[in-house]
Length: 290
Image (spheres, rainbow, N blue to C red):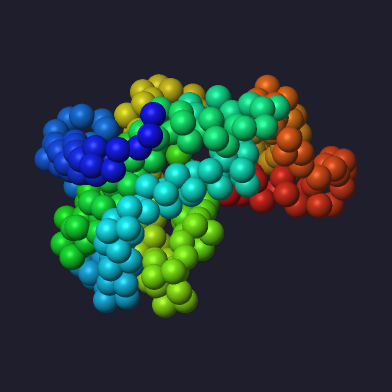
């Protein structure tokens, strides 16, 4: 079924309102006992930083460009191209989304089928709506930073981590360079503005993920479990962090290879050096000291 521009525009605006309503409801419950809400005492270092972040003049070109993309009906094209780029260049991210798990690389037309996937189109429309919400509210930097913290907090439960946001940022810039030509082409100044906006947005989303991770760990285990974990870690240290790191990394590489086979992904890693190799030891040491 061909796209209906009027319906698509209506659906995007509807998703914007739904996003605002859901996130604002979550934000209004900050002081409740709900473990998914972000507590005020965990935000002490954020309020001052939020006062100027998203109202920076450097982001006005990005907003003007997004408005232009709306007028030429290319917002959706950019977002869909962004996720197609992620699915193509960063195959290890596919399992995050249902539409990514459905990709069959043995089918030559998988890219076309991806764009016809309901979940793919709905997710892209939701991201498009979220960016529109950011553009419409970016001048109220403190309120928007709180909203983005909440959005980041919810992403924690979908196994989205900080590096994924960096990949999205790069993929979106790449997608705009690929699909936009003519008056909506991404020039150097506009790209710089977009990167500033996306980096500021990423900063607040990452804060939300980090805060929710801390909140979750505080509430997900009992004092007894915390004591047991502390005792186990003490035994690990007694056993030797270097030896534990080597065992952990060997298991991680084996698990990664198993996941590649499970999801039929052609993304092999370079030949892993032996456990006695200096490079492997350095990597395992860095892993254990993170």
